[in-house]
Image (tube, rainbow, N blue to C red; front, side):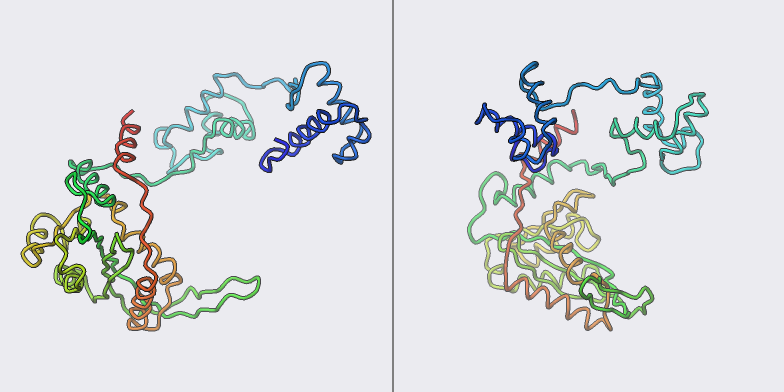
Length: 349
């Protein structure tokens, strides 16, 4: 505790005093106070307390002002906070402290707004906060997710994949707009500035394959998405020697219209017999590692969204891709099949 930087300063000082007196029991209080930067009365107070009640770094319980509201009032506040505003006929999408307080007033309970805020804070209630959530709708969600997680660990159908076999992750990033606008570079103590007004200079689609095992991207820019564009991406990859001669190439994709279902798998298998299309479950793009690369691309290349024309935008995207290939680095995917099964059990409990 004496060396803890995250603990309250008062607790740290008491711990330092206890250690100091333990090492030098005959140390006089004024000298101990000077060493700790405290007053002599403070040192004397804690020496007397420890001599009478034993060593404890915590404050003695303080009586304070008695609670002004009953437990059923607190329960009422929490119950209202756990409701949707529509259940009370309120024209709100979410509750706030003020809206909860008004409902409590209508129930005939007279408490202040500040008291209600303290009740919410003590129970860690923030009914104005919402997070996004998606329920799995794929009937084979568990089975499909396990297959992909096994591939990330180098396993297919219970057996390790061979050293020459490849695991790829592919997807499309559609409608990337080229926006012509004024951009001012940042300066010392000043952030960069981007003009709100802009002119549209068209949009392109970026299709990319992420090599999971080697950590390199291979992509292309297309005017539109679709089966033809996705097939050209696959052709671009499969002509390369490391993929063309591989015994098996596992290509992980989502359920987009250009590569959806068994028909897409059969179409690509006829074109490349060593290509195996692996689909993620519905609404589970987080299993597709290329999405991580897309998030990096969005932050480092596409934000702020400024480009004079489509050619400049495409050159920037593909240039960043080449830079990533010059420094290959696979993602450290730590979420395993065991973690997935454990998480499902926690959600079902």
